[in-house]
Length: 140
Image (cartoon, rainbow, N blue to C red; front, side, top):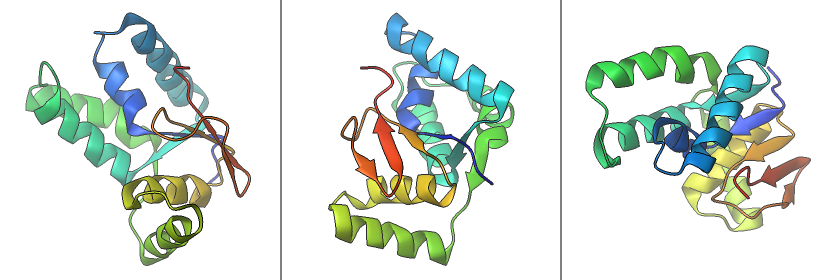
C-alpha cells in the first residue's frame, strides 16, 4: 500500500462545491487523476469529514443518496487507511513532535502510514517536510 499523494478533506469539499471555480477545477483534476491512476489515497477520517460537511455544513447540503453515490464512486475507492491502535499511536507521536492539533496529526499519521510522499492540504503549512512527507497546498 503506497500511494504518492494523500488527499485531505478540503480537496473533496471543493470538488463537491463549485462556488470557487478555480478551486473546484483544481480539486476536480486531483480527484480524477487519483481515481484513474490509483496514485492517491485517503483515510477513514477524510471519508467521515467529507460526508459530514456534504450532508450538514455545505451551502447546499447533499441528499443522502447523492452522498452515498459520492462515497461509493469517489471516497471508498481512494480509502486505504482505517482506524487502528498503531495509527492513533503514530498520531500522538506526530502531535508531540510537531505540535499539530490531534485531527491534523491523524491526517499526517495516515499519510505517513500510507507511505505517501505528498500530503495535499490547504490546512497545513505549504512546503513543510515531515519524515519524507511534504505538505503541498494545491490551491496556492
